[in-house]
Image (cartoon, rainbow, N blue to C red; front, side):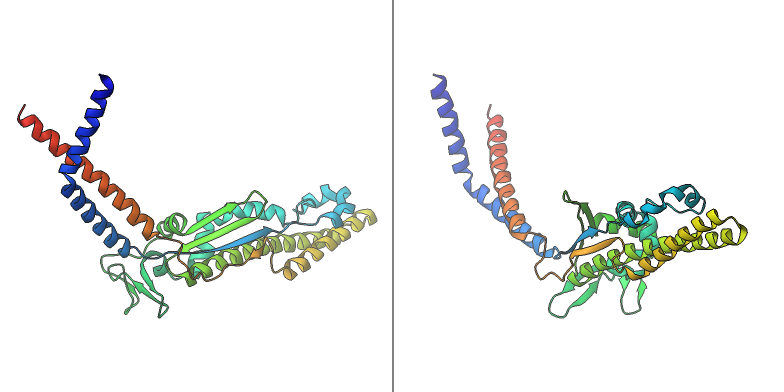
Length: 300
């Protein structure tokens, strides 16, 4: 008896849906049309990426001076940490910091490309800005839109554009997603260039301070052993400054450089339309069931 009842219930549902097939078809069609129109209004996004190899420092040449580590520490010299790998670890945190964005990224990008870009024209390679935010003709922010602060710009940059990941093999990937593939590529290159420059200048400044300190100490002491140790430490710092200037890839080196992508990364309009149509079908069935049961209750 229970099986017959279950079978009857299923047949009832089939009958209800067949009776309301016009409603289901209409709701599905309207939803599909709406989703198609919506998907066409979404701008294309292009993702440019770089795969980076953290530069590892070679400290083998400094092993002979480990006996002078105490003296070196007075000069602010760490013989076991001469940049490279240690800098690359800190760089992953530095890149996503507000201070790095405000000092190294923001001055080197066109702010409307971050906050006011509406779309990119493939044929003419031209940028179209939202007139409600930025007036391109006068190169000023619209009256009802203030120039965004560094903190607000940073949030947009982090949330909508930048992706950084440390891979399992130790490599680092930096990705930028943008409406213009040219800007996406340029911003990836900017990040790599600026993070290398930041730590190059940082280590160069530390080395120069150490050289100044060591020269002063050489002038103060007459003890031969101490002078010898200071001279050797001074040689290390002079060698370090030479290497700093010579290394183009100071913290990260390219394994795979960013390129201007021809294919968009998103949106997937076909997937949006497929999901939207499916939801339209489900919504149609729900409406038919709701109409049936609400009508049935009126006559109970």
